[in-house]
Amino acid sequence: MVARGLTRRFGTLVAVDHVDLTVARAQVYGFLGPNGSGKSTTIRMLCGLLMPSEGEISVLGHSIPAEAEALKRRIGYMTQKFSLYEDLTVQENLEFLAAVHDVPRAATRARIDELLERYWLGDRRKQLAGTMSGGQKQRLALAGAVLHKPELLFLDEPTSAVDPQSRREFWESLFELADAGTTILVSTHYMDEAERCHRLAILDTGRLVADGTPRELCEELPYAVRLIETPAPRRAQLALKHVAGVVSMAQIGAELRVLADKREADDGALDAALRAAGIDARVKEGRANLEDVFVAATRKPLTEAA
Ligand SMILES: Nc1ncnc2c1ncn2[C@@H]1O[C@H](COP(=O)(O)OP(=O)(O)OP(=O)(O)O)[C@@H](O)[C@H]1O
Image 1 (cartoon, rainbow, N blue to C red):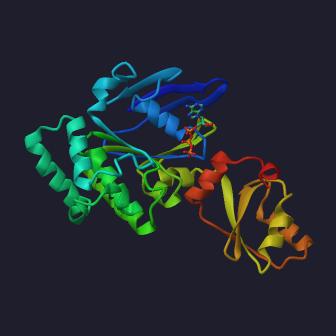
Image 2: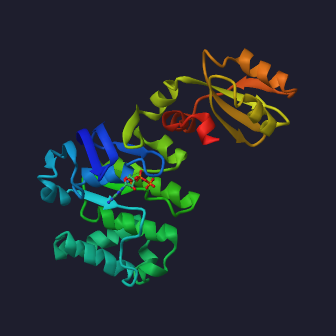
Image 3: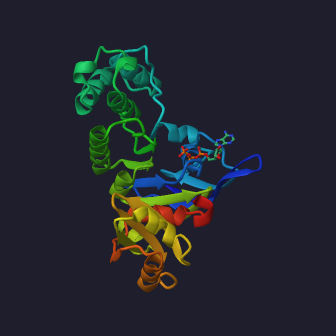
């Protein structure tokens, strides 16, 4: 899947601003970004549901939006909102989708049985979809999205309403699909999920601000990570707020995690500011993680954010 210069305007708002993307086959490609950064709008353009204002898209060899109809049969789409029928049973929902996707009647039963077993829904066959738990609904939605064996799966915040164990199981299912050759584009707000993707793109106010493997993105972080060990992390945060080159701070338990410009805010500058405020503290080196990458890529000036 390739997009070049992908842009979407809503009136004067530029929701997606000249985004370039390349997603290789059988990859799990993650989409990260703050609320309103344009993730859903990008996904909807890539699967042919929304007209781009500008730009070119090629998905599985189809030029989009011109050939969106032909693409439809080859892709699956799942959003954060449960989009199946709450007043139909699990089985009825899947039968309905099989009919929509023109799955031959003779093959439907076997396919549904296979999916119910794979997504641990075998004992729920006759239950109304609306009465299932969040995790079960999400497994049913995934079963529905892959029923017609799509080559490419678009998942827009699929795990926003489920517990950690269900998220893990869901991701196991995604890797199983990718191993079988399915390409997956998935948007998420969870850093542990982003960590698991083969590649990631980070969007901010409609622009692509970072793109690479999780490891590359961490290695290329242009800031130093410092951990401040202190009995007074809140006071330490206040003391460091105005040190030039400190770009973000977050209290993690009893520690303060600081992102700092390597030249401007070296350990000497941090130490000096803490000592001047009379704070007992030790500055340690930390390893960059994806949350640091995300914060650095989407950061607003510290004074504005505070
Ligand atoms: N149909 C629409 N009409 C007008 N504005 C829209 C429309 N769809 C999206 N937008 C605007 O485009 C911007 C991007 O929205 P989008 O839903 O793509 O963000 P997102 O990154 O998916 O957000 P979230 O993480 O909250 O789901 C937002 O400012 C949103 O209000």
